[in-house]
Image 1 (cartoon, one colour):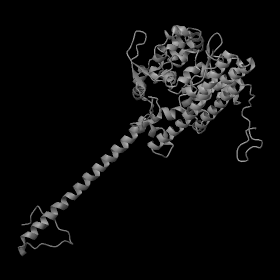
Image 2: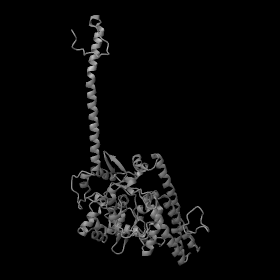
Image 3: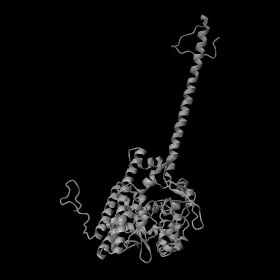
Image 4: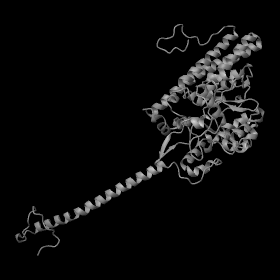
Length: 504
C-alpha cells in the first residue's frame, strides 16, 4: 500500500521499487518529499516578512517627512504678549531645554562666591581688569575701571548686569542699559501701552533702577521670534534705526530690516541687536548705534568726532575718551566668514538632528566648547579634524593677543608720559592736546578690540591691522609730547606692483 506521507515523485526523480525491498531508499524519498512540502510555506513567510519590513520603512519615512515638514506641534497658542519662555517651551520642548542650558558654565570661568544681601549670586566670573591691569588703567575715571568680568550665558545677562558695581547709584546709569540685558518686548509694551517704539524711548529716559523694575526675565524667545510665524524678527528699535543708516551708507535707501532682510541675514541680525558698539545720545539717553558712516572702527570714530561725543575724561591724562562696548557684529562684518555668508547662528547655534527635526542649538555658546560643537559648526565647511581646528583657532587668537600686548604697552606708556608732562610742564599746551587726541584714537581702537568677544577670531586680519594702527597712534602721541611732528600712514612712493593701490 502506498505511504500517504510520501508525495508523488517527479518524472525525473529516481523511481523506488517497493518490491526491491530497499527500505532505506524509501525512507530517504519520504524525507525529501516532506522537505519540499515546506518550501512554498517558507517562501510565503519570507515574502510576508519582507513586505512587512518595506511597509514599516515606507511608513517611517512618511511619518518622518511629515514630522520634518511640521515645524512644531501647537500645544498652546502664542501671541504678542507671550513673554514667558516656558510657555513657548510647550510648543518647542527641544529648543526650550537647550535654552535653559545657557545657565551652564561652558567656558570654565565660573568662580564660586558667597552670596550676600547686596549680591545674591552664587557665582561670578574672572575679572578682566584684574587679568589685564592695563585695561583697568585705560578706563580710570569710568565705571569699567571698577568692575568688569567675563560674560556668562544669556540666562545670566540680566542678573550679572543688575549686580555689577557699574550699576551702583554712584554711577547714575540710565535705563538705556537694560536694552541688551532683559527681554524687552514686555518692557516696551508696558511702558508704551502697546507701542514698543514709545516704550523704548520711555525706558531710556528712566534711571537704571526704575527701568529694572519693569523687567521680568533675561533674553527670551519673543526677543528674536515672531510668535505667530516663528520667523526671526527684530524687536529692538535701536537696531532697526542703526542698520537702516548703515545700509544708507552703502547706497541702499529706505531699508526696513524686518521687511527686506533675508532669513540668512536675520541669523546674524537678531544677535546684532545687542552684540554691537553703541552710545546713549542726548539728554534722553537714546540707545544709538554709530553706523552712519559704515561699520568699521574708523567709521565709528569719525561719527563720534562729528557729533562731538565723549564718554569720559581720563582721571590721569585728562584726555577726553570714548568707551567701546562689545562690537562683535561690526568686527564680524569685516571678516572672511561674513564675506562668505556665514552667520552668527551658523557657528554659535549650529544645526543638529533630533529625530527627524533639524534644530538650531539654543544653548548659544562658543563653537570651541567641545569636540561636538566644533564638529557641528566648523567641520560642516572645513575639511579638517577637531584637533586641527582647535590649533588653528588658538594660533589666530595667540597672534591677536601678541598684537594686543604691544598696543597696550604703547598706550600705557603714552598715558604715563601725558600725565608726567602735564604735571611737570615739559610739554606745551598744543603738544599735550595733540598727545591726548592720539590717546583718544589709540585707546578707542584697543578698547574696541579688547572688549569684542571674539578675541581676534571674528576678523583675524582686520583685528591685527587695527591694533597695529593703535600702536602707531600711541607712539605718535609720545613723540608729539617731545615736539616731534609725526605723519601717519605714509605709503610707498610708487605703489607695489602686485598689491592693490589704496590711494597712497
